[in-house]
Image (cartoon, rainbow, N blue to C red):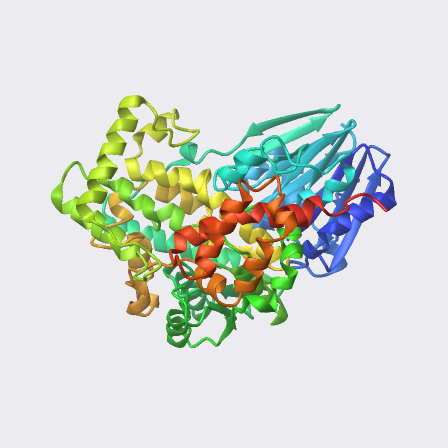
Length: 615
């Protein structure tokens, strides 16, 4: 897990080093720079996880120095691939996955990525053909950006490493669209900064003779599988895949742990780790580290559920009381490091992974991806269309949805009849008007075969909610030099679950039915079969009315806020924020919207007002 940077043609060493060092948080353990015949500069900031010796140093070259790689990520199945490559005559001088990746490219060319089980963004320079190969993992767990400025091609793990190469750091023409569509832009090439583009997930590219050619190498719809006929067999197969995914992701030469919320997904992950360890299948000796964010006295606190899990498994947990005042003075620095916009404050997540690092842990296995894959959000109501007007199924779906809602005066209650009627009227209208745009892959033959719920889950997993969360958690963790691994996002699991009918994902009053049945033997029943869902977010109403009351009031009355061109109608936003601050409105969704509308102002101060030029 690292930070990478490259330029074609090469860049002055001093300037290149300055740019590379903006990524130091991603790799504080080591750095390397290679300049090859003035053709290219390649840089790497290293977070040492596999092969802690100097043999894992990057940029890494093969024996005859034709190929040079810079790599951010992990190839979890590197041991299996290493044996396969040895059988083909390759030798290895390190125990790193980086060398396996490089030899895999030499052996299989660009199709090597289809053999990888992992997360990555990497670049391989062919010094003979003067050709650069770029790749980003299937689902976009590792970031990659690029720009072309004055004939120079620049790529990097984060935008901040590209800023110094730009004539001006200014908002892009897409900024205001992105501000309105925070959950929709991550899988596009759009960026908040003019001149920078996102490299898309599931894509490869070749840069040669000044031209960049990108192509898509992965589409989950091309990799759907035959699934067992009975639900019981499906549960067994899912359990096998999930345990194997955790086993691969427990390979580490440094201590590993987990960020445990007390929800089903993170609890399932730590329970699987405990099971594997007990059966001597773990690749990590030091893994019993659970970190729990706590929001005492707020509706967002799930720490008591997390304690049930750690007590059940006999694992000691570190509980982190999230006090925003401890970190709020660093907010602008965090926004600079985070780079993008989002609907909630980054403080709780950054504090959690800071505690992870401070306690000597460098890698966590977390439960991200399960909600979007197996129906954990409001999208479960899309199964209403699949119910075919079956009253029993309709009631089950609505009861299931209602069970996920937070029972608090900060959230609204659900009227079943009204909700169902509104849903069906809107659904029929969209279909009749041809306005039901679900996914960019809607014309794929296999997409058309999916049931309605699975279509929506496919979209939020591959294109909307999840890609945004993956970006966020990459930043939250890497700000603290911590790597997150995600067992639910093993591509084998993704292909399997997308091949299942909606009835395997929810039913009998429960979301994520498949996970619950698969993990039930390893968890306390109170956690496995808990229906309510909170999600890991900031208790924004409580903060605005208590700890951060003065900050919100002061900020929205400053001249810079009232004159900001990035905020739509600052005075109106000021009024909305003060209605929360003064206790006139306690609605969580309303308060979160206020925060979302305020963030462009904080982002502006953090990035546009900063000097990014070379010294």
